Length: 397
Image 1 (cartoon, rainbow, N blue to C red):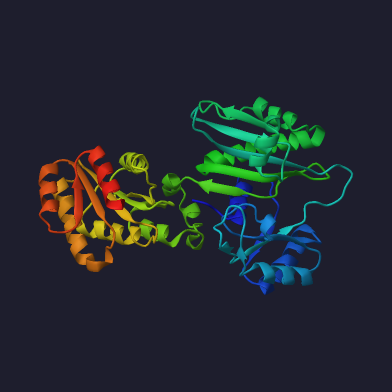
Image 2 (image 1 turned 60 degrees about the vertical axis):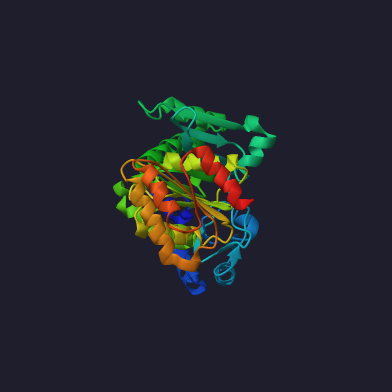
């Protein structure tokens, strides 16, 4: 589950991470009110207006601007709220901005230099260990840094049996070229950041930039946080942070129906039971020379109602040219699934205008094939993987 910047900063702050302070506003008038409040709390004279959407690169699209007085706060907030912000991480049409974060200016002058760093915490799937990735090149796209100056990217892996060690936090501060008070502040920052990552069951933290202020404070100026959906049962307060307006409506509908659905860019819709089989089915579609239009796991109960809901969700994608149903009958019998498919097909009538390929394997698979073949409906049945692949080619040729 992705969070907005202001939500990510709330979590970080609760674990002792120093963050750029701010308040959220939904209108230009509210932006002025919270800007005044922020001035009273922090003494900041200038304010940063930041669009709150689930996408990076907001500054490049005009979603992050500096206001030097309250009139500019109102003007800029009014411009950003309601705009369709286009960034390298949004769809071509952009994302509608419904709220902004009014944040303090932390780039104030002083005796020391101001520096920006990059830092993220994530799982290294190759080693099965958490990893801190960091760089002196903060404020830039990490992909560009990796491509042009890979020697400026450092990683520190954490042994899960002992957690982050003090020497590792000090090594990070040293590699970032810090000393004195800034060095000590970075050590505390890294320790608190990692504790937050583990404590809230995150799958990724990305802070870009991490700022060293002119008086040697270390601050998270941005916060891109993704939480593990599978761990939200332990964090009811975090689950309430979900902003469904930032998610694709089709995925929200699927989640409400208890279906695991991910929208993709291909033309062959998938309806499968079990995540592993779903991945194999997508490989099967690619092997046939096509691209999957979605990942859809209907789970262990593929009855008529559930199949019908899955059909309706898949068919909302105008790019779908065929649907491949691939069910392994272990917990659920294949003949019951087949009957559910036939009943759903009958209920939907003319709504289904694309070929349907059905592969049922497992308990009563032969009986299931007979039900499909004798239904009188234009459903192509298959038992083996290769046969299903051939059917997909046949349907789309």
